[in-house]
Image 1 (tube, rainbow, N blue to C red):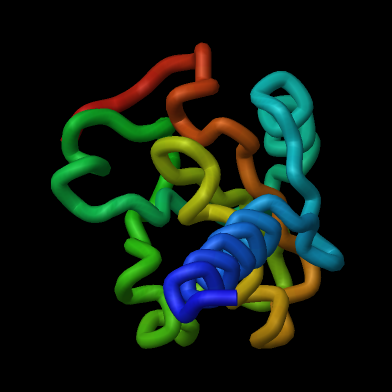
Image 2: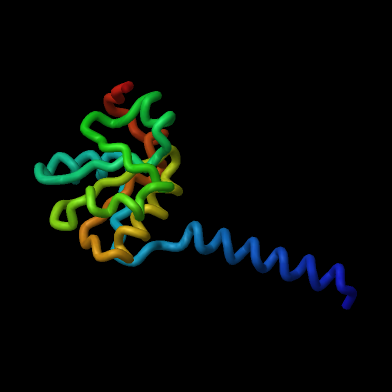
Length: 129
């Protein structure tokens, strides 16, 4: 087997592993579609809704009541996020909110839900800042 073939096999295996890690379920995470996400939020009066997109994305439109805590700043802002309240997360497509949820769960936050499909899947009202 040539060196080029080995390199291609390793790269393909690495890319497959990365895709699996992105799509794999996160233990303890509630991943909900838009209707179930909205219903669960409505049932939890004492909750925190976090938009983990960057500030310029948040300003273009966000779910009313959301607090902007970008994924890029999340670990440095854990002190702003209560551990005793249900957390609801979203981003643009659901990928960053899933990463944020994983960080929160690994840091001891017990009740984390994220919106599958992100704000792109949201059919409700949006607010601009």
